[in-house]
Image (cartoon, rainbow, N blue to C red; front, top):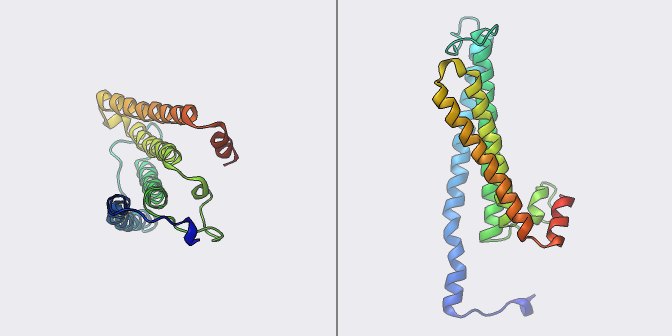
Length: 194
């Protein structure tokens, strides 16, 4: 193993070691994920409290959709909020684990029973595509919430949220196409296996 190691000069060693400056960023994202866990639990408690306890004031959605009671809309919006928190948390895991593995240091999870499948062939391009698709999922949840509350929002707001969502979709498609064009056929086959 030592034969594979090469002594670096001081400047290359410094430049290569600078990757460790990203470590506080990934640790900060772990703290952000903990905040999302607290937010999730708070929203879940609010959902349980307002739904199961008859004396609890139910969260009201501004205006009911045709034929759907406002209490049901409030529950739907709360559940969509919970899904949104979970999807953002998944995005954080991808950035933390994939980013650390790609840009800082190997996690050496080979053979670990909980090693994510996608981690074995992650690189910067795969990570970008995964992040883009995760952002589309999050944007879809926000757009669904917008459509549920459409009667309380202006047409201008709905139009711009739809345009932003379509921009995310177009960006993800462009990233995937660029990745496919720039990747050699062997790498494309490895992704197909995934």
